[in-house]
Length: 487
Image (cartoon, rainbow, N blue to C red; front, top):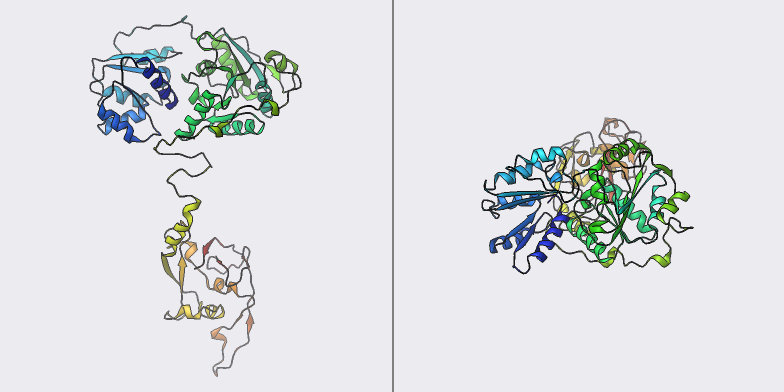
């Protein structure tokens, strides 16, 4: 299976189909703990449904013996034989016996894929469930294509999702970041929406799909991870928020609605920049939308074509907000490696804010002594640090520098280097006497008042919690490169 979601769905279907014969079915895919899968394999199973990566991992661990496999099935074969999956598929096939049966299934089977499949099959038979026309779309799905402006697209989408008779809806985008942004914008507008994409951990992905199937949310914003084979009843609308890459992607996306003889609505937004790409898709599928009509959120033909109530705005009325929302669905603890959202909370087992005090205590126990020999003896005396220079050579100051949280070894870094001028930085207007300016008879030389200088100085007192550390050079205008926490 190319995706984890499809793996879960096929496993559930096989369990229902083989319940009377007590067929043991196991699904193996990433994002879940290994232990339950290893235990099930030791007990024995009849059918293993998995993604290529986890299947190879288990085979390398000698937990999964592929030498006795009688039947190999590649679902969504055009995707499985694509360049991204092909190396893993070839490795799996090399571990299988030569006398196996091989079956490939897909809604779209381009010619190059059929030619490639012959490498794994002997005298294959091509069976089609419908007319062998690759460009044929489901006639019960009403298709609409609009040329929408990028800045107005969210307003158009908000009105499309208020169409009469709309049930569950899937909004397809090309990137994970766009999926998060669209789902957040829709939620702010009152829609019960959630995103599904590869940056979410497996628990979050399954949570969103369960909430969608249960009707707790009615808008699922997804990348093409949900376009392959996902069968969810009650999906009435599919919206291509971003133009699909090619005709195969278009067919798989709109195939999420109008399934098993049902009816559905497929809406595609085409940006000005995507017009050439859409025209290629349109010609390949022989669709009548070569020049999509320019459409805005207030265009009358948009309201008329999709049955949008007059006066609908970009915000869902409060009376229509009847869904429980994603928060009503709990996240299942899958026990596997967890990956957080990009820019979101840290994953389980990774240090977060609650781990910082302990990390700081550990850092406090690691100190390094740095010595600076740039004539800092007089400056240290002015700063009240003469006692710290005890036992050091003339013109040398010994300093204890604590490694900052997470900084590790500070050797050779600017955080551990303290110039002589910086030591006196915490004493406002300290009087400094140069030793070489004293007379031979011991009479004190003229007193010179030290000025604070340089950009970026913190201006904190000597007892402050932080200490500015600047490069030890003669340029007083140089800004400090870094900060270190004082002991």
